[in-house]
Structure formats: C-alpha cells, structure tokens
Amino acid sequence: MNMPATPARTPTTAMMLVLTGIAMLSGFLVVLTDQLTAPLIAENQRLAIEAAVNKVIPGSVIHRQFRLLDGRLLPADESTGGQIIHAGYDARGRLLGVAAETGAQGYAGMIYLLYGYDPACECIRGIKVLKMAETPGLGDKIMSDPDFQANFEQLDARLDAGRTALLHPIVTVKHGSKQEAWEIDAISGATISSKAVGKALNTSAQKLLPQLLPLIPELEKMNR
Image (cartoon, rainbow, N blue to C red):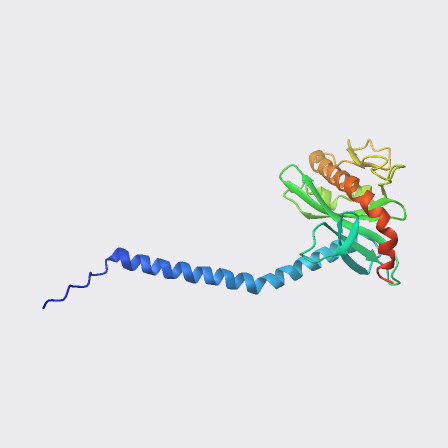
C-alpha cells in the first residue's frame, strides 16, 4: 500500500518559519532588555530630579516626596493619584521650600520644568528645565541666560485675601519692561519660550498653591 507523500516544504514555508523564530527571539530580547535597564533608568531619573530639587530649593539637603490629592498629603507611591511634590529641608529638618513639575507649549514643543516655592516669602525661588526641544542658541537660553534666571530668585507668588488664587498672575513681559515682582522679563529673540515658562508657572501656581499653603504646617513637621 502506497503511503501519501508528505508535502515538500516550499521556500516560502521555510522563510515564514525563520521569520517567526526571529520575531519571537526579538520580542524576548526586547522584554529582557527592558527588565534589565528599567532600574538603571529609574535611578538616573531619580538622581536628575534630586539635582533639580537642589537647584530650585537653595540650601536643601534632605528631600521628601509626596502626592497632593484633594487637599491631602499622601505617600508618593505609584498607586496613589495626585500631583507629586518635593519638600526640601535643611540639615536641621527645617522646611525650606516645595518643588513641583509643570509644563507649557514652547516654540518647538513642550517645555517641562521644575520650580521651587518658598512659603516664607510666598515666592518662587528657582526653575530647572527638565526637558525641551527649543531652538539651540535662542529658545534654549531659558536654561542658561543669567538675566532670565534672575527672574526666579524671588518671583512674587502671593495668594489673594481669600487664599484661592494668586494675588497677581505671573506674566512674561517684553524684554526690558519688567516693573513688578510677579513679572518675568523675556529673553530678546526667545519671546515664545519665555512666555511658555511664565504660562507654565502661572497655571501650576494658580492650582497648586491654594491647596498647598494650608498643608505647610504639616510639611514642617514631616522631617522632625
């Protein structure tokens, strides 16, 4: 009795098997690489944020991270909702300020930054650009221009009498025309980038500070 002949594998069948094997191996290597590098990436991000907090909260040597949700301070784990805030303390445990992230659309893309708020003067003490794609030599001057950075040595961020909004909205003005403590003097030739910084700070401060200020006494006790 003649047995049915086994169909011969065609070049196409062999090619499909090889491609399937390569795809499975590639997928495995991608997952493995992600698992191996994730801790390193997370640590690098932590160190970058730590350095940024040091810049925007001058003098801070101890940092604690929380989430702010519905007027409450919560642990900063990933299962918790709300905005992440960073509290900075001196060596004696005295609260020096709070840092928060914000962002706004610039000329070439989103500008993300961290800013520090000092409750003692109710002012913004510094900013640190975390990520942006602004034009080299123009928009990217928001990171390095000393006159622009001087805007944030004591930028007025006081709340109104009802403690529900900023007393004076933070605004960016034409280069050389700054007259008020809540104004940001723009960089000549980089007005759009400068305005993005002002918009990011104003939007965040208007929302964050009315929730944050009632919690300052609680934050002051957190590291004592």
